[in-house]
Amino acid sequence: MEKKILAAVDGSPYTLNQINYLGRLFADVDDLKFDFIRIVSADSLPPGTEWMDELDKMSMLPPQARKKLTRSHQFMKEIPRQLSRRGIKPEQITTSVRLARNGIANDLVHEARKGLYDALFVGRRGIGKIGELVMGSVSMSILEKCFQVPVWVVDGDFNSRKFFVPVDGTLHCLRAVDHLAYILQGNLSAEITLFHSKAMLANKNIDPLEVFFPQWGEEWSREHLAGPEAIFHGPEQILRENGFPMEKITRLEKKTGLDPARDIVKLAIKMNEGTIVMGRRSPADPKGIMRGVSDRVMSAAEHVAVWLVC
Image (cartoon, rainbow, N blue to C red; front, top):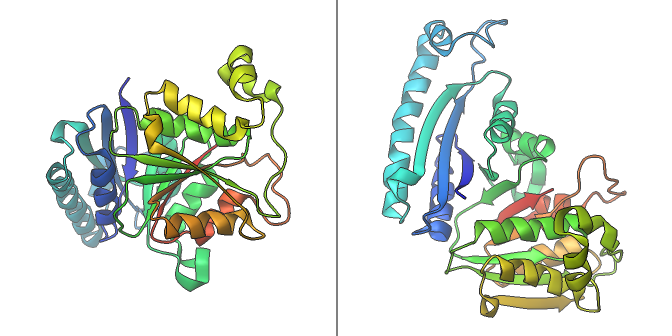
């Protein structure tokens, strides 16, 4: 089955970080398709034009907005050339430019759901010392709204093909591993660290087996998600069944501080693990006074990519 990634770009220099990231991870991997989309704000259009035909809307744009649209089309033509230099074939890449209908973030989330994409991939401009405030309104809004489709966020440019996967025996954690295993089928350059935090504030409650039955079945769940090593064994089995080589998987268990989110970010950066892959709770799930671990990881992570899977 062909895997599809919707990559949202904005024409800024930070788009190069996304291009470098995809080339580094997926060069010579043929079963991935990348649809790059640039949604241009239509703030200069009068109210009531949201659902007009694209050509009609363009005819109403002021000259400055038309220039922006033209530059966007020119910019998008460069993406296949850049990716082909990094080992991704032109036939794996499509590009499109559209005017916003309901706002850039809303349009991207809608497109990701409608197109049945395996992930929505965005960049951000760094969080610096004041955290989420400069994360970028579009990427922040996407994270707040997109739960049906996994979201990949890359921050900065770095050289790593390693994946850091926190595991804790919960359903959303195993779904994150399942997503990673599916994406990495046939990828021979990746390495995976399965990390279990024993920090004081880490989750100590493993989900009951019955929670896993609808997705993995009762027999499989009882065989691979029970026993003293279930936190590691279940994820390893999913990776094994998807053809990922066991010699490229490492187990890591540490108790280094109070907060598992801080452990995750600090260890990932220290070990040059370029991508953190995490499950996250749906909006309906309680997160407690400190928010979810994935929220705190996303707030603290710099110069690393984070994949969030609900």
